[in-house]
Length: 411
Ligand code: GLT
Ligand code: MN
Ligand code: MN
Image (cartoon, rainbow, N blue to C red; front, side, top):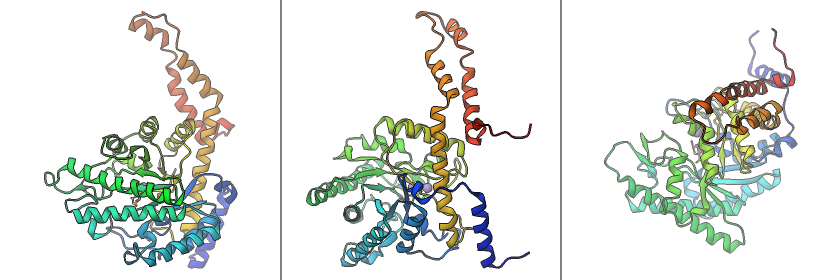
């Protein structure tokens, strides 16, 4: 029977409820899960796509996040401020309204970020040749730091966007990377000055890489490239600067996300984490967490729990264009949060699973071959142990599908 939109909504909501397994807003709020204004307000517009949804004001986003149980809100400066409000009294007024809305609904602003990629002024990148463009970009970064302090944020994110080029040989990459560092230095210095004046701690400055888009070639395409840049000697406050890896951005270049995160952890630079999902070597589809690679996501969370990552999990996905305005808050956000929490809890099961623990312990103890044995003797002594690798992979699959709890499929 064909359904009208009212009946369609009723169907979607009945089937959503029938899915079960939802966490309560109180349970959701226990996690450091943050919701971006830009994700909630994304209208479906893209290069090949007309919008499919109506604009959503920050008041609505904040109210809906509160209802869902997303305790933190994140934003770009220009997600909420029109260009003609930047840095003037209108900005103060809007930031005041945001502060009031957050307070009213019991949310906190955890992170702010600067849009240095959308406006025409950034066509040549945020650290291009013209000093006036770089000075403008610097001012925008400093202004965002001020907004962050005003709203009580602890993190600032930088996605350099168009820091790259379409044509090789026209840009001096070394110079561009130095210029880019000058912008981040200015932001850190502004942070130190404002923090001292307000008696607040400084913020964590988090670099986010994306390997392709929106330029043909990107100067800092991966989190590893950003680590090298952070430690390059160009930053005046490298201790304030770390990473905001995005799950999909690390996958896009073909890497293992867990290994990117491991390198960031090793350097003490995993400050912030954008969570979503997607496919290798494709564009930035920003699918919600766990819908493409749930097993990999389980493994990622095991790693982060093992090393006590305690930063934010930022829901940087794009609700699909086929989801309605109501669907964004009724389905996209709550189901993303609930998959994350389910995978988080499963990660706890992985960490205490007796089979995985015993297997891993046995592997680390080895066969006990005396020092000085030759390769063949070492291999022969250990060769049965290595079968545990495949068994462990199977066990992870079992945990993912619930077989470790006795869930049986017809056999
Ligand atoms: C942009 C990008 C995201 C970043 C945002 C932060 S901007 O939407 O695709 O991955 O996290 O600036
Ligand atoms: Mn991101
Ligand atoms: Mn992305």
